[in-house]
Length: 95
Length: 485
Image 1 (tube, one colour):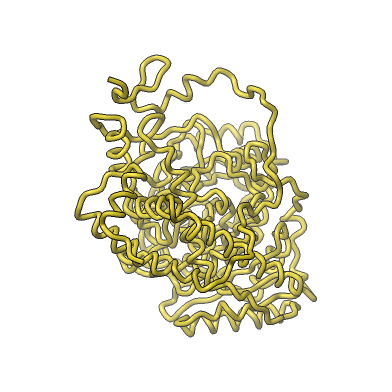
Image 2 (tube, chains in turn orange, cyan; image 1 turned 135 degrees about the vertical axis):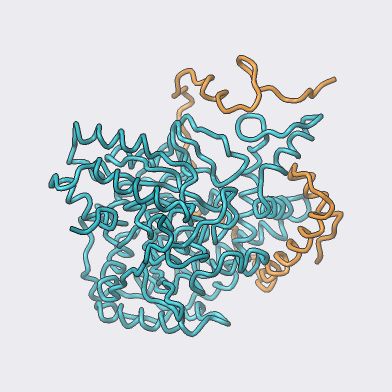
């Protein structure tokens, strides 16, 4: 299997990472050599193997649905690159 | 008297408790030495002034019952520290100042530790040489232009150069053990679930673990005792009975069964690594251990499995960096354009590569062929260890397939870089504890490490074997301070 330029561009779109043409070619090469290495897994028959989804053999704990922090609005907004008063600001989404 | 900075953590604590050294004297020594060691590029953010201030406060009101009484400690810049910049080695978090503290670092401050600064690392902990950091390469104090390993490369370098008495790193595929091996220091990755992941910048959540890095095994046992805790804030934290690792530490390992897995004898492994391993087996026998040949048949599938699972989880974890809530933002005409530009400018090449791989293996039509397949093989790898542990108590292997390499030597070939982690990755996939201890040198006089892998939650046996072998190996660091200004 080879990953072509078209696929790389599609994945970059899905990843929300813009990509220059020149870099896309290098990335396609890198990804192909990595996938060649990954293909080794196809040597193994795994039809009857259960996937390992969590190494901690416990079911995830649920916490009580209670508020545990005080008013932390300012702390949350503090690191935002653009904000006004109580909101994050983003480029216009709806015309 | 020996210089303060070359004392072990254990000795430093003893001297502080006996009031022979004050916390402020210790802080001054480490700050001075760090100031003179900028060429190593270990620090991303210094906390020197605050450290000196807090050490004085400690001396004015000392509490010698604490486990780390007034001890200055620098930590990997992957741990969120309240009001102190945390970058994860990335441009995208260049200006990020957390308003909360990771559980592991909080545990250290609760026991009297004082933050010296934040240490360089590969970007988002993705790398084996510290060369992917936005903040530049780190020098290995062993020799000029040598990588310190990665991703905890700033940590291993600062520790080996005596800029901090101990440190903490994180290990997703070998990021504590491999840099420890490259710098002649000790690095322990605990069992998955023993140290909280809360407040650690996430890379691959089913693999990430924090752990101690130190000059000797005893120091790692002291630090592990402080950082390992059950934490409700991490949903995969495990509530098990933790040992008093340092007081239960013993060199008596008579009758302990140590397995030697034949599959770790990989093609092209240098003779010196093979010899180191053979010597390690002799040391273990001298310590009273029983050596048993074992098989871990799926070993060669561990790296391909890792390079599906880790990027998949990373692509999902790193989706949060969108230029809206925190971190870098690039300007764009539309929301989507802003996302794409921010992420393109904020992430480095290796991180982009892994996000792309992860996105691909999770994308429609490929999930079963890659991600599900990898999870199934991960089950087989874990079963290999389960079977082996019916016969043995621990496993002995080399830590890495080579010693430290030159800066730039492998940075253009991702696959050859990935092969660095061939002996450490299976341990993360199976969630086991593993330690790397310095065990010898190669022809260039660069350090080589041996790895001891234990049963889940059995850090104590891992530490005891390491403690016992350490005495027999008697490794001495021979660092010359070549970088000092």
